[in-house]
Length: 110
Image 1 (cartoon, helix red, strand yellow):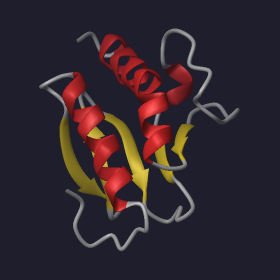
Image 2 (cartoon, rainbow, N blue to C red):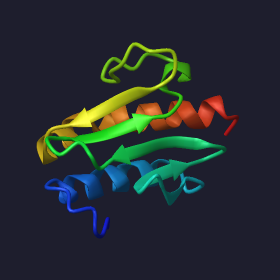
Image 3 (cartoon, rainbow, N blue to C red):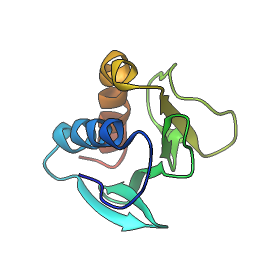
């Protein structure tokens, strides 16, 4: 459970955290830049607590993920975002989230 973020969607943040951490037991979580960050052989993704209208999960190297990930947003050279509007959206995008996290594990040789 994320404590102290003061985010209006803390329950949904917890849902996203649970999904990410369940993908692989080697994934760890730490607090970096005042936000929950998921780690396996480098930073996978961080939750941006400044986005209050949705849960914003930033994949630090999202552009490098193998495979296709149509729900990831962003067109820059590095970062991609997966955003969740509410609990139903977390459920709807769960498989996409799991696929993106697994792609990172694959990329890092896991």
